[in-house]
Amino acid sequence: MEIYQFYDHINILIKPTNSCNLRCIYCFHQDYGYDSTFLKDETLSQFLEITFPHYKSVSIIWHGGEPTFVGEEIFERYVEIAESYADRYQVQLNQTMQTNGTLLNQKFLDIIKKHNIGFGISYDGPINDITRNSTTKLLKNMELIKKNDLNFGVITVISGININNLRELYYQMKKLNCTLQMNYYVDTSKASPVELLITPKQYLDAMKNLFEIWIYDEDCNIYVDPFMRMISDIYKGFSTLCARSSCLRNWLCLNPDGELTPCDRDFPDEYSYGFVSDYDDIRKIYNSKGFNLLIKKSVVRRDKCKEECDVYALCRGGCNNNALFESGLESNGGFSCIVTKELIRNIRKRIVDLNLFDKPELILNPILRKSVKKLKLFDYKI
Image (cartoon, rainbow, N blue to C red):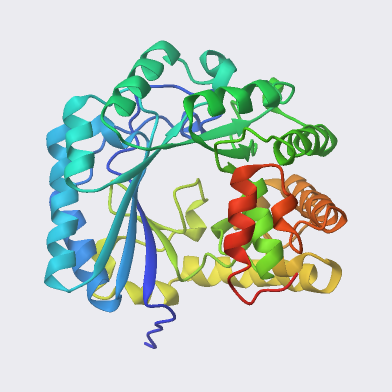
């Protein structure tokens, strides 16, 4: 059996559990329950043993479910197991965590500081109690985080519930001094309320309006995505974001039961890579039935995009999971495709019209000005 090794680096999403203390109204876990299984130490060790010897650097994103649901002791044990394998195989290890933040406490923050773990918090801003709950607890924890001199970013889901409140969201994040990443809602759950749905026009109108506020904001103190990343991608001529580049062969998810899947999102069983126990070398997943089916269908979609789309270099056919639930893996033209293309085109036109790259000193937004000046140090061209 042929073994492939395409990269020296791999990004690994590890789910300590699918359990969660919240019940966010857009979570795909609601379709099949919040399984209480915790990742076994033996499963984690076996996975790291077949993975770390083949890479020079590894990024682990502790995900879920809610990764802090397992408690401080178990979570730190997972982290230390990962560090021990990194030391054994001389692998450069970077660890981050995505959390709802409500279970964080001083013990967890001490662990985060001790092991230098970056983290992001899922928070929907002014409407958080409608979509996620426990807002009061989370805001108190954010204060505790700040007292510990730790930085964190916020990931917000843009849906029909908050599409008309993006300005308020932006100003709240400025007040909290938090990096803001806005992800649009993708309808993957049969149980999700209809009020979450938005049309491409609603999304694009709201994002274009927020972009205009952002680029002219002389008091901006935070990094905002997708705006900042899209500007960087436009300048470089390519993207490194997993949703706008080929994630296959450099992203992987380890589930609590030891199943290996393309990422932390919900994929039908036919795209499973199997289980940790099936392999003695992680690279053999590239010969699995699930991987080959996924790449075969995604290539069909991307070939269509390459022929038809003027922003293909910046999108690469988009996210496989989004395509799967919107129009099918082999087809483009779904919500994600429409809004990504149009937002990139709009931002590209605006930065060209405003001559942002040639004269970054004229940019009013100080965070954007600094980023563009940094980009100009490299030999990229629009």
